[in-house]
Structures are given as structure tokens and as C-alpha cells.
Length: 193
Image (cartoon, rainbow, N blue to C red; front, side, top):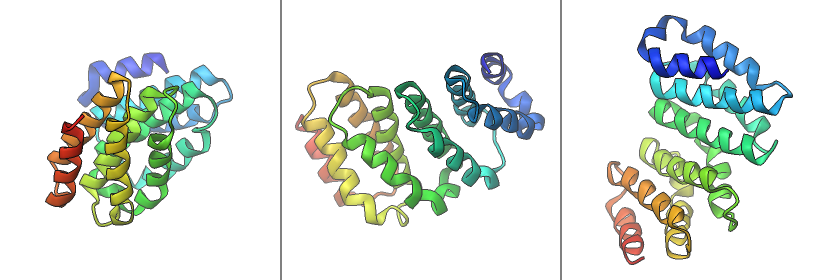
């Protein structure tokens, strides 16, 4: 998996004709019992989503596989949130049918008060913002809670990584079609930090 990650990273666009085979190999590895193989597979799939276009009809299978292992361990959880975050950025509006399935997972992670999972919280915050940007209609039921959580995360933080997370999420929203009033309220509160 480590070699596959580096192959994707270095060759990136040159792998387009092998994307399905690579994705199948990675998906098979995600189901392994050995935790380090799973973590490396999650890293590889996140890199694949960042570098190479993939068959979007596989989105539900990918989401299901990742959700099934998300609570395996803190390290696997970090990898899962990273992979889901990369999937959201790559899938854009094709993620719409699955927004209601994955939004609660991201909100739950942002809602956690512990700083045990700063990478997962960062990815979850960015993912919420990306969902609001990509599929605002599907996220309507979560939009108020999402904005509130992002603002609370920024205003109640004692950790610089939380502030960076909030600004990262709001920068995604600033490039979106999120209703101006919602973004303005969120921005004002986050700038007040």
C-alpha cells in the first residue's frame, strides 16, 4: 500500500487507465484485519481521490467500506476522515445522494470536545463545509447546526489547530453558494475570535 500511495503521488495522471484496478486493490485492503495495512490503504485512497478521476458509481461502496471501519481505532479513524474528505472534494455534486448518510458522522466528530482527534476534526470540519458548498439543498437540514458547530469550534477553542480548522472551513464556504446571511454570521463570529 505504501508503494501504491507513492506511485499514485508520483505518476498521478498517468494512472488513469488503471484507476479501477488500483481502487479495487485499495478497497480490498481496507477490509484487512491488520490495522497498518488499513491505514496505508486509507492514505492511498485519499491520494487517489486527490490525483486521479475515478468511477463515481463506486461512491456508495466506498462510503460503506469506510464507515464500516471508522471506529476501529483512533489512527484508522483519522485515515477514514481523511479519505472521506478527499472523496468529497473529488466527487463534488455527485456526493448529493449520500450527504444525509455522511453529514451526521462529520457533525459528530466536530461535536467532540476532546482534542484527541485534531486531524479527524479538521477533516470533518472541512468536509461539512465542502458538503454545504457542493450540495446545499441536501445539506439544508444540517446547515444551521453545521454553521453553529463551526463557529463554536472557533470561539471555544484553546488550541491553534482548532482556529486553523475553522478558518479552513470558512475559506471553503467563502468560495461557495452558501446563502450570504449564513456565511456572514459565521464569518463575523469567527473573526471575533
